[in-house]
Length: 127
Image (cartoon, rainbow, N blue to C red; front, side, top):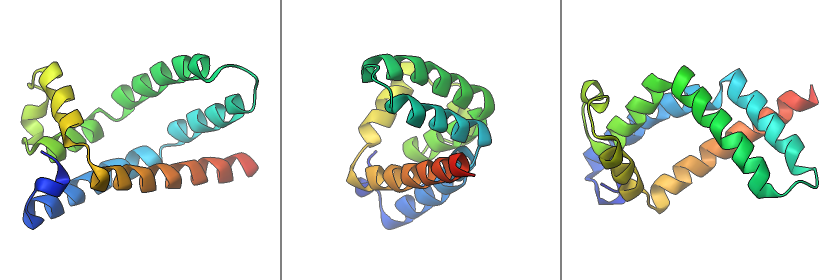
């Protein structure tokens, strides 16, 4: 369900549930290091498709390995499924539910989190 289609109570609860996991991921030193690598690669002449092809598997591996609980909390918030049942969900149905939950409000939330993460990565690279 899209955040914009939720009641105020549902949307408020979802946003509260999303904040902690996003913060955990955005402040993870390994994730910041990965973003620094991405920033460095952007400055090369290498085609973006090759860069993305190398970085996405690293990101997914790190996210699933180190942030499984955070990802489950995010899925729980977006699908209104209890966290304890997220691991039992059908993978395709989970991916479809996440795609179906995407809207401008959620995109804004992701964008502000991403910008904060990129800023932290840049500050870390400068020091």
